Amino acid sequence: QVQLVESGGGSVQAGGSLRLSCIVSTNTYPRYCMEWFRQAPGKEREGVASVYFGGGTTLYADSVKGRFHISPDSAKKTVFLEMNMLRPEDTAMYYCAARDPPGCGMAAPGLYPYWGQGTQVTVSS
Image (cartoon, rainbow, N blue to C red; front, side):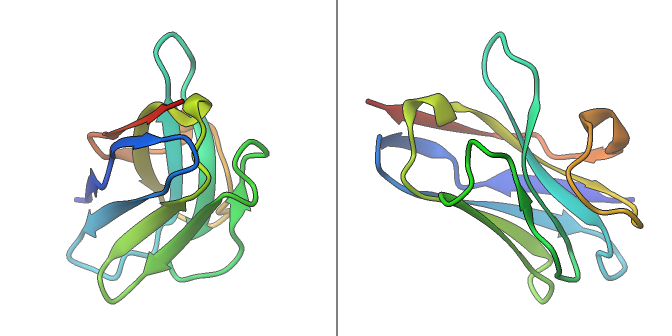
């Protein structure tokens, strides 16, 4: 059984930064494909960034490249999403998700069996 718990959301002004955390609760080493998603009101859930928990290639949506950084910390069983130069259009509920490898990379939400409850990010102009 895998449980994901996000934290770190909040309200910031445009240009500000936030760091989201996703703690992965599992009895074994978390060898999962991890992805951060976001969903704004009235919009579909979209992938933001992905990584393999053991490290490796990171992938980003074009809209966040150069501003967001995803990083796993295996000792803490946590995946971080560092968000810089935030824009009002980044406002959304942010979720982390996990699935079994192989084939880590950005994928459709339906392929992820494990989800956190989400953390709200609001960016004001």
